Image (cartoon, one colour):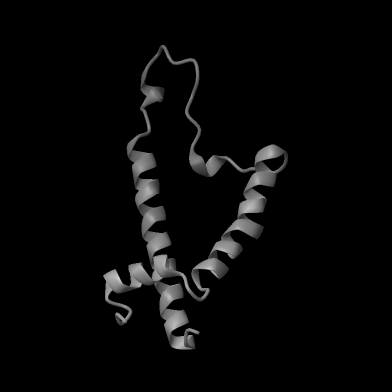
Length: 99
């Protein structure tokens, strides 16, 4: 069983990694945006990622399942006993002692 300090460090590491990935991903999306408003021949305009929200329907249901079920289940799995995959990441990061 992990101590509260170790769980807190793990949570901080996961949160930091997720934040770095999100920042990198947003930068990649913005860098890939085309300058479609500069061409007189464009019939369609790009939509910004911040202008889109799933409010109902098929994709809203899928996003809710991921948010409410998949992510919490993966968190439980990753913090469970006998998870050698996560232990290997901790060993590589120097955050866990080898056996």
